[in-house]
Amino acid sequence: MIENPEDELVAPLGATGRRSRIGSSRRVAATLIAAFLVGAVPLAVLWRISERVAREVTEVKASAVGESVLTTPLLSVRRAPSTLSGEIRIGGLRNSLRPIAAGLPEQSCMEVAVEGRNISETNVNTPLVPASNLKILVAAAALEVLGEDFHYSTKIVGIAEGDTIQGDLWLVGGGDPLLTAGDYPSTEAQPTLTPTHIEPLIDSLKSAGITTISGSVVGDESRYDTERFTPSLGLGIRGTELGPLGALLLNDGVIAASPIKPDGPALSAAIEFTRLLTESGITVVGLPKTGTASGDLPVIGTVDSAPMKDVVVEMLTNSDNNTAELVLKELGKSESEMGTRIGGLAVVLRVLREANINIDGLAMTDGSGLDRSNRITCTTLQSVLIRDGGFGPLTMGFAVAGQSGTLSDIFLSGPMRGVMRGKTGTLTGVKALSGVIPYADDQAIIFSILLNGTGVSNQSSYRPIWSALTDALAKFSLRPAAHELAPLAATDSP
Image 1 (cartoon, rainbow, N blue to C red):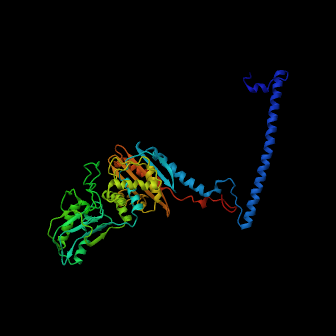
Image 2: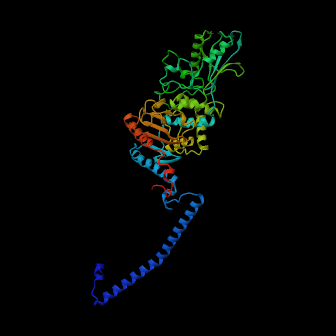
Image 3: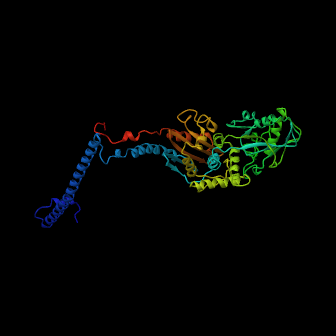
């Protein structure tokens, strides 16, 4: 055995055995060189031929159309400028998102989509508590099933004779979550954006010359069931963050000058409407009560809500819990005799399935997202948002960063202010943000981030994550554009 190949090359000529080995090695080397040359020559010839043909074709085309000859090599990435532009822009954003994704709490998911495709995915199929981001699904289903132009109608019915309503005046609820008295919005922490004022119903009575109601104002909430709260909802939330719910909900069930809401919102509405009638000079003889009006009573007046596209804005911008739950019941009403939470949930799931939305891991208990048993994945959220496109009635209903709703006190400075539209979500140990960041007239970044875990709802925990994410997204742009990366002509600079 030869330990060092170099020793073989310097062996004395008189060493016959070693000389024969040297000769053999040289013959092998010569054979390999000859084989290489035999193969290389045809390749070189083919390369020269293809190069000449490509040059001649280019010259013929250029001369035929009067254009300058392109100097960019045939195999240059500049021959696919649109692809190159996308890879440069999206690749840079993808790289900037990696450290953010790596630093997320363990129970979290994040997904970012640009130009209709997801470019960053972290735990996207992990079901997490969404808090109020669940309202996005309810809003999407309402726009799909009820339609943008759907409106709620509240009416008064009764028998008028001369200047008197003989017997009771029935206030019939149509499920309107935005029904208010004129003096109510000023008392709200986040005033109703498009309230349905009840005063026009009083004007209808006055126009008919009515001065007296010989019976009572009766609140009718028969359009929906009488489930006031989701059964599993905590006591600390009932009556404060939500409800009591019903198809006749005036002023969110609040009675003027009363710190406690009655359990029945229809009675609250009857009490408040009686007050407003009395203040307007119409006498009501009987005490407020509840019941179900006969279908053959004459309609005296009707008041309609804003269209559903505006109701959705209220639901999403202000994250209005009552609105979300009543919209859910109206979805149930659209396919059954009575509006129910369970019926509405079935409709939402059907809409998602028909839209081919991935609902693996989805668990919906309510419409507001207040119940902690709700679960959703970033994949489901993103699929719904991407379907809207970032400029549809769903995402146009989101709060505007630093300006409105639940984002009015967030992103008060920096590139997101007045640009990003988003839907927040908050429970103890839960923080969510889904949003849209337009970067062109018809293009937008769409993202969702759900944080679950101890302490994540503290500002010191979620704010740095939100800031890092939005700062990275704000740097994305249309540059370099495809035309800036197109093949170079002979007169262009490299």
